[in-house]
Image (cartoon, rainbow, N blue to C red; front, side, top):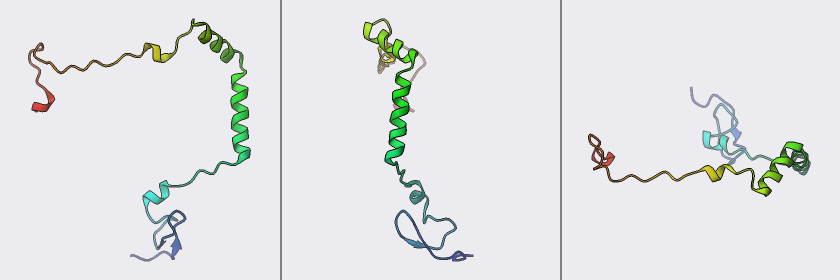
Length: 97
């Protein structure tokens, strides 16, 4: 039963449609804009400042400055690129599949 719903305008693109929801399509429903007011921004920045004043955060920052604590990036290693499979018996390249 097409055209059962009343005509309405999509809030994202402005297209007139007769579908079930407020939006004309799925992509339009994903494009909701997040409106951040200045009061919301002030609350977030105040909470971040408060978090940075906690004793464990201060202690960790001091350890990082002194070089005692290390960052997670220091433990990261590159994954080796193995292209030569002649050393391994019974294995074939994925390109040959």
